[in-house]
Length: 633
Ligand code: COA
Ligand code: AMP
Image (cartoon, rainbow, N blue to C red; front, side):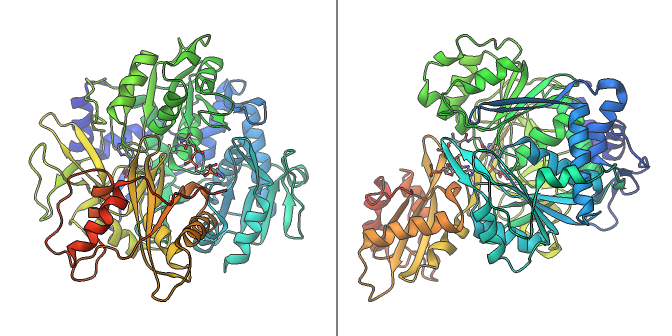
């Protein structure tokens, strides 16, 4: 491939020919003659005249090439004591069967299907089945509560929802069906049908609009691949923004397939017949890209793991998976490694597992703290690669591309921008920040293939959220700097998004939930540093004048309220009733100042503060681990 510099230069000097060359690795029904259509700028379209089917590229073509007997997907579920391997031939048949079932329900090209499922192979089957018939899937993470699911149903307006009777969270069985029923009750849009995968751990009672997965598949003829435009949407994935309304990130078919396949070789160094294990969830972008689509596009074997890094039943499960399936590349969030390290600080549980096939550990989803980096490096003796990206981008922006050329690592930095990404740091006036100086991290337009072309049904919000801050640049929402050697350092979000255990959450939506309580006059939720989860949310509320409620009682109700509205994954367990919140003279709550104090920094008090006394009263509360800490059920 050449050196990193060569490849990077080729991607910036002539993106058209760089990406057209990359596109040759995909099987097209109509081969694109052009890479980029800029005529609608700032809306860009990749491979505008190409036609393809992503499912064909992920499955059928490997079978046609004679590799139908090779393992495509391994389902490893310590929580149900199940291991099942699907060859490419078997997975193709399962997907074609479910695609046929969806087609029989009237689902066709462009129709949306919401998938609300635990980590079972049928979740990947449902995604690929949608891709097969040109339908657009929208997977909703199982840890979200009915209210969040309803918001996504109303935005995506699916014809069908696919779900399962239950999920398994550690040792708990969580019934999904009542959550789905409640979400549909709350939603304005009513999907025509729901398909339910019955699981033996807790089967669900089915209503008149519910269809049993197995029965439906048995009665439908398999469906073939439908070629679609490269610019057609493959999926919508909702992600947290500043407000309570999630953003529907749109992913196209052609650009995504080209970029993912390219990244498998260049970034992750995984090729046909090799195994990648991504410890995440299909509900997140990491799961979409590197559990499902990219490994299959590359003809590799992917491991779909239903369990946790710890406690299911122990902190040695990642090593067991790596050994059993000869994993070459492992990918997870740093928090998973912090959890393992907490349980097994010396890594004793690696003993007895043959990790000789493991070549790389990739970590993303949140900042990789140097301590975790050093611990994992020493334990595994393989390169530990921090890389930075987002739901919006679909694949990494900054990484150490070991498939091209591994660069020396600087702990704390995910290394340098990948080919295709023209990353800059700008100061508030839009001028380039000098090397080493923090500013807003932006990417010069056009974004490479695979990144979002827009937000679902909301071009205006796409522009307002990402393109309006700096003309000609995509705003990542992260701040940081680039050093003299071109290494990027990502320091944190500039908006109200927080990262809890690698899960992206909006403090804005938690505030909306708190504000819905009848006794709350105003509130603030901030993300504070946490040793295990990276960040955890803490809530502060002021009660309405005249409220005679016991603070402790209201706090417990508020914790429960957020759990019910957003889901357990919000992990808001500390809410404190306070007398007042610090504000500027114009009434803006000083969340950044609160966060700084809570994290133990010597936080300067802004000159615009209305009443400095409020901060002083709050300081000990912010500094303490919350005195009214309340645990959810
Ligand atoms: N369905 C239902 N509930 C879920 C859920 C799901 N799919 N996923 C998480 N939850 C629940 C958890 O059970 C927990 O509930 P609790 O408050 O009753 O204990 C709550 O949501 C918070 O979950 P989490 O923040 O994940 O905490 P945890 O203690 O269960 O696990 C880690 C902590 C670090 C082990 C886990 O978050 C992890 O492995 N993270 C790294 C991998 C990852 O998924 N990254 C995402 C993107 S790469
Ligand atoms: P998500 O959209 O869930 O993938 O979350 C994206 C956000 O997670 C980014 O905008 C960053 O704030 C954070 N993030 C992801 N990877 C990294 C990383 N390697 N280093 C620092 N922050 C990261």
